[in-house]
Image (tube, rainbow, N blue to C red; front, side, top):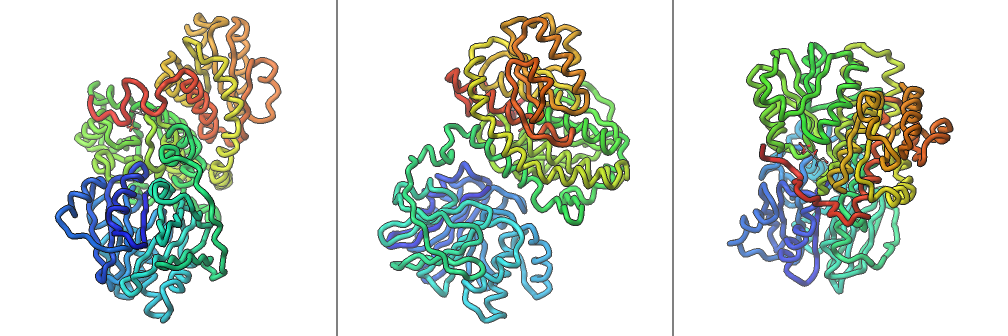
Length: 612
Ligand code: AGP
């Protein structure tokens, strides 16, 4: 999820663009760049934050009343100067900024290289601008026509702005699958990923539609066409939100925004990796290590916190499908307990930030024993990502809320893809089972969107339990890690003590805690040991515990027992964690808000624990 900004008008573009990038830094911040047109097309970019870019250009005399700028959240290619946007075309007459993922960039790049094109970066974006110029030159068409032809060849998502040295009075904009808004000022236009860089200059905006191109001419009107060259009338709206609200896209907190992003972020974690028609899973980042994982005698998963909970789901899914023994270790324990590590062990390190000190140390230890290290990170080029032998990025986009939500579901998605791919390779599951799970996995984003509809119901339940002093979360099988994760979410943002337990463990102690003051959240979906979970619910009820049950839609048995029932869409048992976690995220969020807690920055916590 990158940030793009562009300007054309009577003012100097640089101050507007750099301020716009600062407004968008919450969208991505591993490298930044700017291109200005003033007779020449000049481009400045570097690794680091927007402030690093400002330092990079501070002694330069930057002129130009048309320009484009970008703050990157890497998806393809490490964060470095070369991979930063904007990118030049081969002739250096065109420059482009892009937010999104071009899924078929590798095949397009191969063709362009065969036609003699050279690349200075390994980004998908540079492929796009070379393709556009190649079409413009060889098919002798104008820039807009070349862009239309190119975008009809591209698979993926894009929000792009292009400027051309040969036409200093025009911005060319296009959008599909990534957000993009155009601001209409007095004789000036602004383009950005969202309205935060625009709102201080104008409240008149046009939200470009899917597969639409905007041609913005200086001192002229704004024209919109589709990539199939159909004219569209711009629909001008008036911005109502204030700046602070805009960064959260209207949500009160980043955490709630990120909870609601999960249909998109889960989809993005599968984008370009799951081909349903061909029944293929492709994880490019571990392609050279697939056989190593297939042959592994053991997988060790190391992680902390929520990532450890994702790892626990990973244990269940890898053993269930790929029949490879898995153990999940708290990285902080693993690094010091003198563990036995073999050379043919495969260690999977899971980390949203990619900077967790304990996880990094666990990796170093495993590496020193000769194990193979696979990473599952959200931050491209992070320390953990760079310390591993191979890995896959979750592509969940920046997670600002300290309480991890979309990163968790993206991690679980990736672990499931990995386990499914290995199981298929090993032949440890039938072809029909493989395709059945694959098809259900593809339907998860839509089912998560449906699960989010319980928000209002959950808010009412939160109101009833916001003053509870303790919570118990119970689940069995694939829902046990969900119970742990739900308890962690609640305690870290509402400061209510909460514990997650395997439901059957009740009898071994926790049942002594049950009384009418104890809310018990039970994930009781109708798979696996469902009947046994119902018995556990009856044990709680017999001791007057208040039961909040997460059930499969249409459930009737639990409804007769529980005090509150939250229904979620049915899915494969091993995919339930991706959906069952949604109401628990919402429950912790609403309770924390009702308790007046700082939801995005809870006390004593940091987004990334880079110290022991
Ligand atoms: C989860 O909500 C917490 N923020 C915390 O437990 C977090 O998951 C843990 O610190 C691990 O962080 P990482 O995924 O960035 O390594």
